[in-house]
Image (tube, rainbow over all chains, first blue to last red; front, top):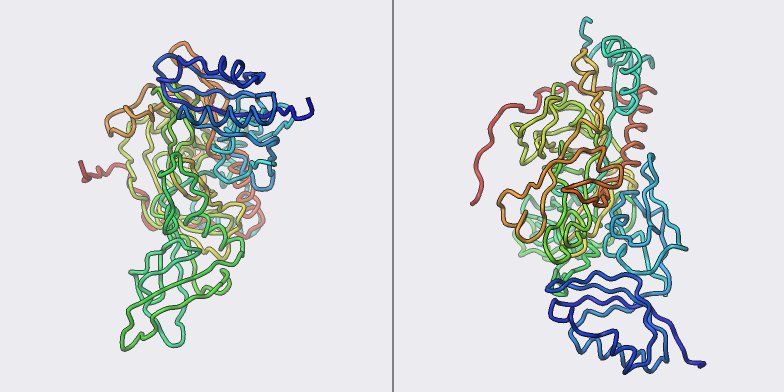
Length: 138
Length: 394
């Protein structure tokens, strides 16, 4: 399949969608192969899922329209995050939200380290960084 | 020991003979030789902190245009500055947003630009666009003005922050079911993370908890340049409860600080964007503590284990309500370890203030003093320690 793509997507949704069999529909109706990287879901609570989807580009596009139609906040993620060491103030605001340990505090000196090989491009650090030191490379 | 005076210490500084150590270094020294000997040997202990400090801003004077103008509304890179001071003076506040910023209309807002960023741009020497309008008077007829300028083109520019350098501060978590976007950062639901903002044992007001040496006129490191303590900061609350070491269990002391923007270094003056909250300014402050006596030295030996801060719920039922929201107390040592234990759970912690920059500031100040280029300022009034401050909206 020449047009097969893999893209990462983050989904945020309200409690009423937590019980919906969304992954099932992505597989059955859109023929996508999901790989869940991170999920935080509990009944009657806000849900967050970070997953990569592999399949035909056309199917992927339709699936995004389907998810948006469910009133989910759908964000397609960039392929790579870059960290600007010079812009970084070495605070650490990114480190507690980073799910993979790509951004971490080196102790005892309390400096920030970025390991791109561990990064799952979830965008959490982009929201958390106060000085715009982490950026998306498209 | 017989006490030392400011004059004696300053004379040693000028001769290049002063013994200066950081608030980290003094801990080991006092452990090795004892507080008494350490107090005799050491003249100055330097402290440092680098973090987001709201209630920051700068006064700017543009000097008079031809023809003259009484600027009524002023914008710098589209961020409004308050011009109701005089004809060509204004105050640019760190948390001001540009006109037309969507705020949280698309929640959470990004807040990429604001007063703090303009202050950073000025300090970095980058060009900033000034725009002003006026209604015109007989003595000040001009109605509008636009000019791209840099800090060098501004006649006077000084940072004057009504409240910086909190002595201690809340530690934030979120007990609710949804992510909250706060001035303490992005807090995940169900106590998913814990954020704190303090340099702990290196923090200025934790090394002189009863302000025995800090007051109006104290000479400080401010944003990479030299500044002064101008006044007790707004919300100064010295009567907060304290532990046996004198360390307050809440925010307690604050400082109003002043310093020449033209001397500052943009590495220590940074505009910040807090997702879902707004903009502010990160600033570096370092205060030298003169070792006037044994007691002064004793207070500088405080360690992270002895510093506790209140863990507060910043979820919708906690901090925003204005009701008490303290869940318990955690030590700076636990917070710095990267994990705290609370009610049987281990929760990841992250700092919003930069400890490595705080170290750099304390080291820089130590270097300045040791080289004889920075002397102590004897306060003409110490900060109040026992005043009850009252008043406030309900």
